[in-house]
Length: 256
Length: 265
Image 1 (spheres, each protein chain N blue to C red):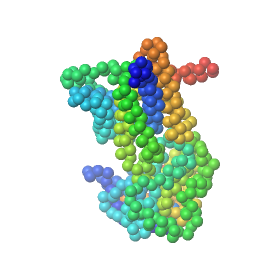
Image 2 (tube, one colour):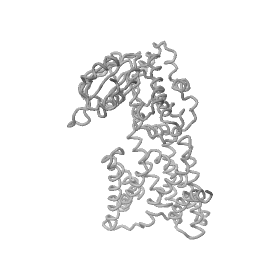
Image 3 (tube, rainbow over the protein chains, first blue to last red):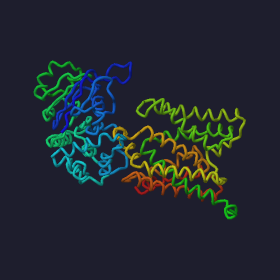
Image 4 (cartoon, chains in turn blue, yellow):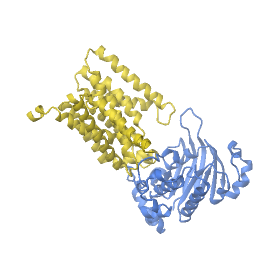
């Protein structure tokens, strides 16, 4: 189990530009499913990349179980946005998923911590999560193993990408708009899978534009628009939404 | 040696075989990485390096590879593929470098057979050309042997590859270097301009329904080899220029299946 705490994260893409994130503090507890919602340009993807360690914040710090992010980066995995993938690439689902195991980091310092964390975890499935077949079965794509990636539907592709992300030995999974461009049944299906993953002890953060009913499926909701506007359970967020000043909130808002 | 001297067609034939296998394999990597425009860029950027190398008394291939790589690095430093100006900047540098090459040839007082450089002169190829092709072939095989997984990962998911610790910029530089080497090595076979046909057409045929990059490369190489050999034979039989002949066969290999489909329907 791993708890991620980020405090006062501030980040600008260039020195002269306005901060994409301003004093953002979040806490991700073990075994929780967190929704990270906000309008376009709110900084959701930026925050996920910083939490994963791809980008370094200008200010603030990130710790996992009290350890600095640099020492425990392998405990966090990021599932990128759909648009960053080359879906036409000639590859089978099985090969895509197996790529999730690859780590080329030169730093060896993570290894003992990683093994220690894995051994300390009693959950059988998490120990098995590095196994290709188990992971594909878990997300319901075992029967698609030999299919070419571009022959899958959008929902199946997202599940394959999730399986690839789950192949890493991470405990905290950051999913960048995984439901974008999915039809409602595929989206429902995807959220059911991530709910199951959270129930077996993994921590998942799912970024989304969706302010609707699906927020009820999460344990925690973080409303972001450059800074954290609200954090809490879906019910408590509903009450706060009226006080939150987000221009895009009026669009597609079916919470109330 | 006397056997080779008595059989003038042997060295061109071996070059045809190597280029026919190498160019489509490289093209498969580049097309799946969406870097085909870079091939065009590098092929046009080769000329100033060739000219300068000749003037300095260095082997022209070395100059060609360096200037091709330099053009690629300059373009990548000015733009990135997500930029809306990407194609415009790439084409500007492409034209500028070619123009620079044409400008400096008379200024340096050197003589280059531009037609042979741009469109190839396979039937007069010599051992030096063969050696260049074999070096490019070996560099490509080395890249694929030690970096295949990384090439797949970066082509599929550059962000994920970067997050997993792959140095994406270094890999792209290695790809640019190998591309420049392949283009320069194909100079005698099809020329630096017409090489684009051998890099892309067999790949279009080979990529269809391939379940892995490796299979796609092998299929593309097979089609490339057939096209190159056919072009070589037709050039000898009908006394044609091999580079343009191979390019025309590339187009025909795309059109004939479509035409037969139309006729059948």
